[in-house]
Amino acid sequence: MAQTRLSVVVTRRLPAPVEARMAELFDARLRGDDAPMTRDEMAEALQEADVLVPTIRDRIDAGLLAGAGPRLKLIASYSAGVDHVDLAAARARGVLVSNTPGVLTEDTADMTMALILAVTRRIPEGLAMMQEGRWEGWSPTAMLGGRIAGRELAILGMGRIGQAVARRARAFGMRIGYHNRRRLRPEIEAELGARWWESLDQMVAQADVLSINCPHTPSTYHLINARRLKLMKPHAVVVNTSRGEVVDENALTRGLRAGEIAGAGLDVYENRAEINPRLRRMPNVVLLPHMGSATVEGRIEMGERVIVNIRAFQDGLCPPDLVVPGQG
Image (cartoon, rainbow, N blue to C red; front, side, top):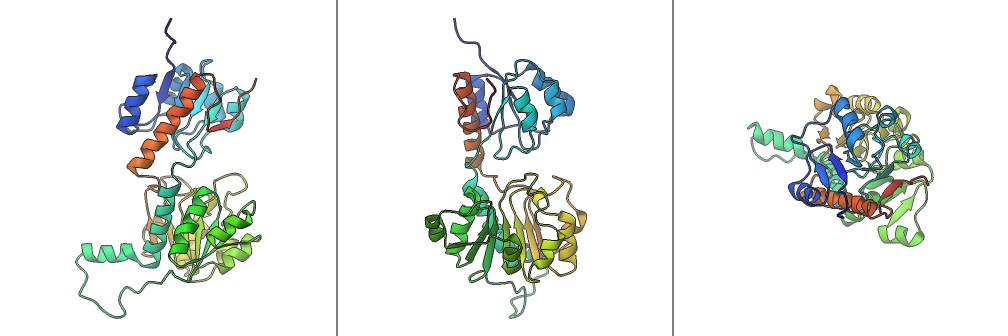
């Protein structure tokens, strides 16, 4: 007898090749539009699915998991981060959680460098000037930005993405420092030309550009707070392509308005899509709509990793990107 196909519920629209493959392999319930599921819709999905495929915007908390049906055995998240899932509640119910690590490393590192250049070279200001017809011709002192070669790039979080940022920045002639929970091996430091700072305070005080590339955990929440922001040089720039919660956004806004920090490039925000309106009005702030991973190649690879995790589970194997171990 043919094996019963897994019931897989997908919470958002995914790239067409990914959806086609899921429909081929599983009993897939795909999203008709790209609107996030309501809480009631999510509760219904958890009741009927063997596998749920959520995204980073889907909050799957203990309350939702408490109402999950007995069939739910895997949450195969279409995301690198998993802070949107209550991992302890999932573990308690024997639900596996997988993610898609490493897929978006190069794309996010590219966007980090793009933001560094955009802020230091005032690219959005120049673009707005041209689009609004305000440019009156070249001038020796107009639109002066800063050269990044020779500047100190401080990387907070030296995992895959942090190291990819370091490689790019080194090619631009930047000096690399980093702070991490664990120091890298000497050969990796040598390859990256990176100096380890045991003290985060000392690192941010020396930074010309601070790049945030660490995950959001209880220990990293507001790691860049008002006190640390005040340690930074007045000409320093903050770039965040990781998680908005790592930065105290109100403190950052105050520092920018007071001229204590020269600029910021942000692709993520503390309150998700609820962006501090004062940030929108600052010419020295570049805001992007969480598009660091937004490449066709990257999003398809994410879907392929999700499928690999589901198929491994279906075959009775451990999903290769398991986050929460199952309970025997």
